[in-house]
Image (cartoon, rainbow, N blue to C red):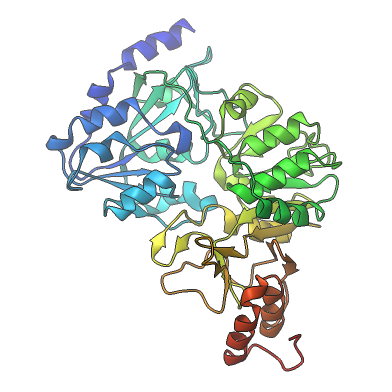
Length: 446
């Protein structure tokens, strides 16, 4: 340990010194989700008047970066996100934030082959272990790739980060980093799950009855996947496995209910594999030094070919809207960006490759103010809406009114099936529109 501590102490610098390496025009990588830098971010924000056109990259932000608060004009810093959350949306709507289109499984390769060189890569890590390794904690995702291609590599130590066992590409050695910052050891950012609504519960019930014993689970973020997780925890299902991009509280609940043992997984047997985690403290405590969990890079967890190797793979994600052709938008409201493609497309494709696999895209049938509902099932997507999942890859679609499998269906069959799970108050109008679009047969149900 002493040989590594000597090297550690030689590389130990202040956050202010680390921030001094950034020059105008640089690309700086902040890490991912709960591992976004904090001490370095504050120090860089303090240099706001010294810098221009610094382009910062991150994703799934759980708090507002200090550089954004410090820069009212947007001339000094702007934000480039792989996946938007509330803070990212606020930055985008102010004209100081931008979304980078992705298939999440490909992000490590983007860094290594396709994007502009990174001047500085920095992220939060656990304290160095006796072997000289820092653990990327809850965000292995693509952290290793950012360090592989960055000119200056900086780790920011946070004693509160859980040690998340691998897997692979979940650590970096002291010999591979240029500098070490000791941060303020702030508590882990929390991402609580809201209580499911009656509609969430109705959708969850329709999905859970499709899940067999021994299935392997992937849950997206949001009320409906969370409701599915809660219902699984209370079900009679057994011998479940986990292979997911995002590890959330629901997996902890299912595990503690004794439903998960991974015994039926065809790869990574007995381990819950994931690419990043965010939740309440119980999620981080569950992952800390847990040999039953497996932190991996996202080009492994989200690779549709890897997913396809897992029998009975169940992928459960949210959608924003779907048109009568079966195109799913899960990331925007017209031109307004909400989230991102993330791994949804990866898992929709991967689940279909799986023997017995199913992907479920779920949504409430309507949205909007009370008394002014709007249908999420619409004739065609609105201008500016993003096609997250093309019609050819969509499998199961679920609302509180039912579930339909669109695989292999013709245009009129798709229209009929989707209208059957729309809110009844919109069904007649949808039939009229389908007829105008020449995708409604006379023999269809009226």
